[in-house]
Length: 96
Image (cartoon, rainbow, N blue to C red; front, side, top):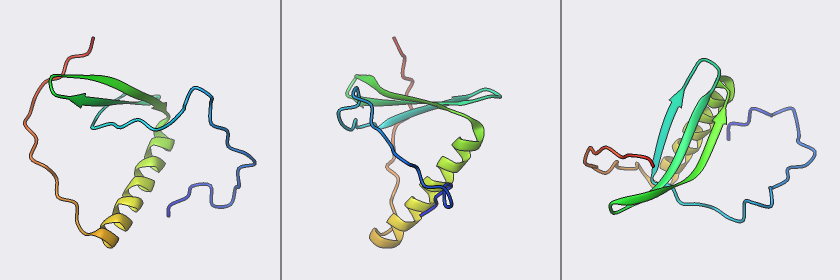
């Protein structure tokens, strides 16, 4: 597992009270400027959907996140086989 804190152990990690559980996301929008990356996660079903999470982070941490996700994807595929991407139709999604 890629761990950018290899030599640093966190003393304590707290989960905020307003995060009761996990949210399912099947769409992610990514944008950026010089200082940060913004990730907006949404759950789209049929003709509607809702934003289920937003993450804003700096470029260096964004790169570490991608490295960690690539590492986990490789381990997943090594164990369970290659993930085949679904053919999804191109469509525009508007936000209110």
